[in-house]
Length: 66
Figure: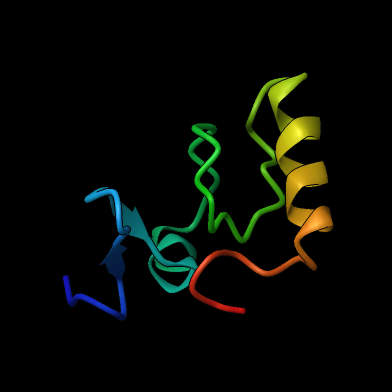
């Protein structure tokens, strides 16, 4: 894995996978990854709706991609 391409570290010190990495994985894991390129399809409600609304409120751009 390559930092910046597959993941980045948030200011809080959390490792966060990029949409590129998640696309390479090939499916939504259902955990609500912030850069999920699959529209959170396997995330159970009501969490899915909350995540989708949060993404829409931020212009559909995941952090680090604005």
